[in-house]
Length: 177
Image (cartoon, rainbow, N blue to C red; front, side):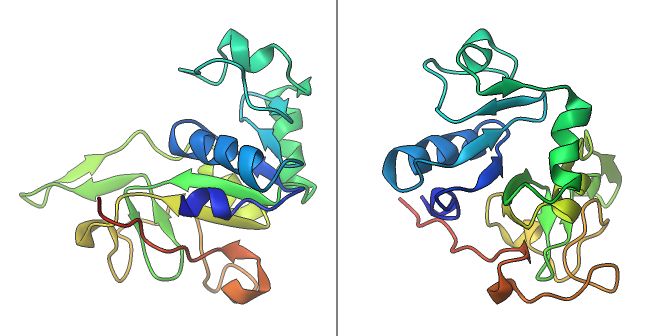
């Protein structure tokens, strides 16, 4: 799984749910045993939860956690530059790594509001690098996103090309089954 390969041993990873969580578990079990998972509700884990999680606040995620911080303390890890990698979802991502999770156009061209970014803008701006997870459909990969919810490269960010390991990271598209 391409997302799991983005996690390096020793990384502090802003995990999230679904695909990022699966990626974290795969990385921990295969090549990154010292990675630490950070959940936006403040849970820090150095081992995957023992049971399936439906939300990040489920009992199995809290039981055996390395630490349970407040959301403020959790977000402070980002501000301190301690988060190596953040996983983000998006409706659109452009070639500069800008993410749109705010609004898209429907088939008739009307704007449709999405739930929004939550802490995604903080993760994109403050984690050392981030990976956007989304299906690779042409409509979701425009030349320029329709709305910048979370910044990639541009005049608002010191330019550091992806090969420096900072900011949005390119990843190979998933293979078709």
